Image 1 (spheres, rainbow, N blue to C red):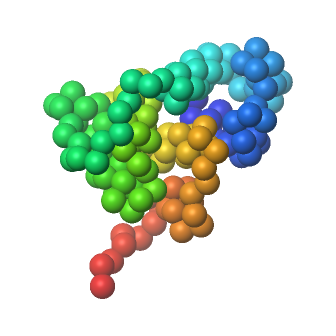
Image 2 (image 1 turned 60 degrees about the vertical axis):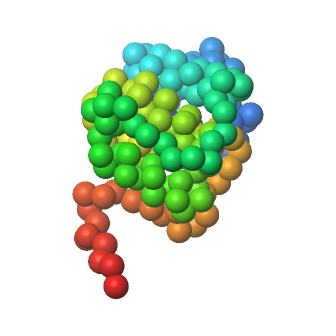
Length: 152
């Protein structure tokens, strides 16, 4: 599923340039993606669209507390990264909640940092926002291949 999300991000620079789900499924199949992965990706994207258009999420300027289930499902690395993005001003409170909800919708526990980064990119993409160059590099970097960052 995540390969499809990255493909969509790289192929369609804006979400409104993306074809309707049925046409998109045919295009993804023609490119060579598996039908099951296509279905999972389209379901995930539908949930993203529903989250972006719902009025249920209220903006908050307070501290976000995670319940035990969220810690288990997301993992401490993902929660730490979400907090970093929020403190850096990359994610607002509403975007943070969408990222958390979409990460919880993934059938993986805990969510890997690489997959969380793709989720963040897709949330920003769905809202027509692009990360700045430094944040883009951080979102697309592979933590396993990097040397540890040193604080000066």
